[in-house]
Image (cartoon, rainbow, N blue to C red; front, side, top):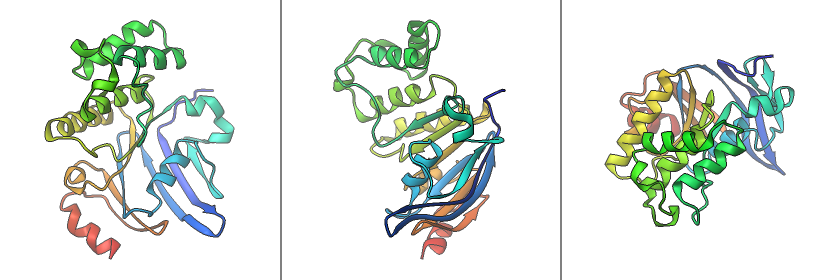
Length: 233
């Protein structure tokens, strides 16, 4: 069976930690080419939702469907179609950028890992820094390497948790361009962010979360700040 999918459905999703409800009755669907923004204050449940979508934690109730299968039904095949860029960039600072990408390419079982790494370094604009230790990279450079690490296996679903934090204007513009490219390639992108200025006009849909619940959504992300304030107040 083909492990690929073009639809993601979140159905009556809930996650509890003891008596604390991190998520409750979350429902939405999206498809190939969508950029979904998860917007809300700290503690709204955005990272918890991303971790469930990434199959890193299980919901207390409800389910996520990747096409016609849940993570439990699809197993490693479904997980192999997911890429994630979280708060932790999952890079080894004592390795070079090239060594990091080669390592992860081999983990994914990609053929010719060296060539894959070189191509991704070039795509990140870091071909001339590939043999430098990640330890000496700026935040923006590390973010570019980490994004290519998340995209090495050409995932269908790309999850990003606060990807614009600490980036300068040039690095932010480069990241937005890369996300647009993945959108055109038919990826489903789900982004948790506080950066409403960057999200404005980028998102296909904005989903507003507060206290673990969806309190609103918009299919037009232009003028996002004003609508966000109304939804979250």
